Length: 222
Ligand code: G6P
Ligand code: MG
Image 1: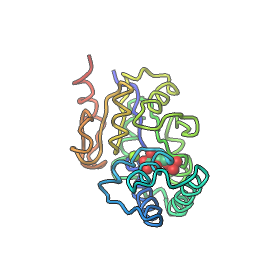
Image 2: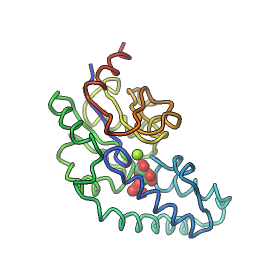
Image 3: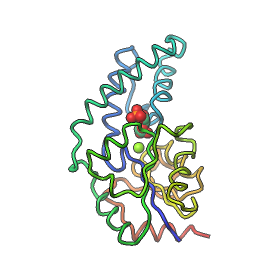
């Protein structure tokens, strides 16, 4: 029996994945490492420092900066990102998400947020969604970024629910890997090739329906 639904934030609840992309793209260009949207898929769901290291590796610059300089580059990206998310309002919740949250509450299921973003609380406040969630994992307390299962396991633990009774929703390949590693049912939102590891993939959040998700979940339950 499904007991909880655990959401990723960026690219699932709201389109801040685009702001992360814009900020990383500008940072990459400033150090001579331009990259494509295709490469950006590898950054989704990945922590700030891990993302920077991937960009540096792409440009063959993994040994070009000291740890201190890397912190400064990460700060530059974050300052830009923080500037971009100032425009987030409650109108920026993606289509279908408020309805899904309301249906989850109506069914008496628990609801959690598992984002490795240290800006997650600020974004949830801007969306005025913080009170709609039973728990939000604090990214500062997570040692291993997605694709490691730690953050989804942490969300289940904070909700007091068995991971097998949880369903996770993700837009990132690393996020889907994290959900599956946690032993949960994985719902992908986005491209079915990119998210092939998910149990089911929808093209957009507008297609998410709790009734359908329950049918899918029950189909795989043992
Ligand atoms: C999420 C996003 C990533 C971002 C990460 C860290 O997982 O999908 O794009 O790099 O959070 O975010 P932060 O706000 O802490 O830099
Ligand atoms: Mg995401």
